Image 1 (cartoon, helix red, strand yellow):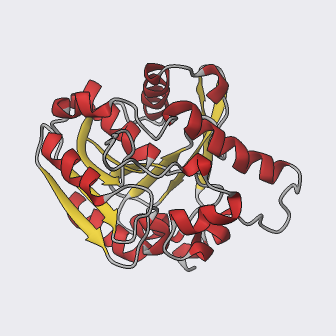
Image 2 (cartoon, helix red, strand yellow):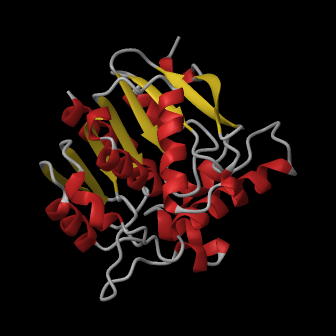
Image 3 (spheres, one colour):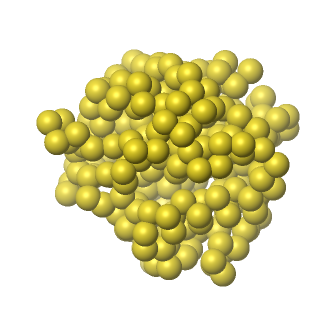
Length: 265
């Protein structure tokens, strides 16, 4: 059977008493992925490609599709501890974890690597949030009208629309509520303008890091990638993906997955 047609296994981890979905697929060295803005209501092609070489573990951040409990999280530390507990609940507490993420998820990956450096072996980070430059501010994703948001997040807006379109058989009332909840969750953690003070902690990150940026990113200026690479305590390199927007993993799933696989090999 074609591996792409096989759905991931589903489990749940409790974080602060709230269930968070965990997807697993593939075999090999575990690779954890923390989703970008809006979360993952569906398993995307990008993760299928990674699952060809790794056991891909995708825990849902509280408030994202598949996860609850975001209203219990107030401070940045609350969120970081929740993500740490989520990863531990997935059995990834032993250390030397391959940790990847996008946007907010990439920011949380960096926070975990900064506070618990012994837990993370390598980082693959797609346009991480957490920095702020008054001269070049991040585009405010919460200020966009909903019809404009797909074009801000993806080079091809249809890639976002396809991810967010309700599948056949989905609860027509619950589906849009879940998508709105995901945007609220990232706002609770990163508003205003994605600034979490991460820059002060970057020097604590010792794990080698791969920064991935879409060449057509309309949310984060390329200068943020350069500042982040310069601030990290460990070695870092930047890869720019042509034809991709902020959520590069949706626009160019094969290219992004191939870049991550090569770095984690």
